[in-house]
Length: 185
Image 1 (cartoon, rainbow, N blue to C red):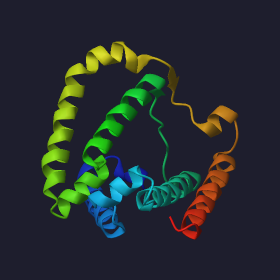
Image 2 (cartoon, rainbow, N blue to C red):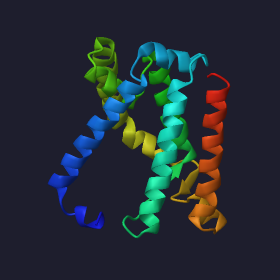
Image 3 (spheres, rainbow, N blue to C red):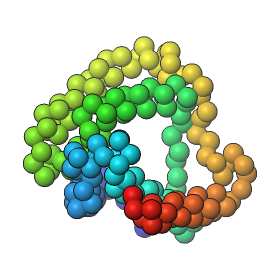
């Protein structure tokens, strides 16, 4: 079923747009597009964003691996490196701490009419993407290729069925979410 979508780019674009709008609505309803909520997360006084992200990780992890187990989808992990992770984390953290939005929440915030997200977020993303694209050839030969770990996944690394890793991780995340709720975070 899902493999049939690979050759149908028009349907993919419509599904991506619909999914993006739904995701933005859910982020807005969950409060993750509010500057104060994001800053509260960074100050460890409001864990709304963490709870939304962990819930998305649980749903996404189970959904993707269920589709794979049923033969409806294939996973193609992207190769990575320590250098890519470090550079990406620094850029993400700098933007997140400076503006109070991540790329996902900035789009939702623009959708709800937050001008700071439009001016600072979208313009910042475009400028940052341009700078990264201009520097990419030099970065690729340097830091981005350091510590290459390929397309390894934890199940492949340990040589086990993916559900042996997925199930305990999902249970741990659900327990963490439950503890956060009970603790009043």
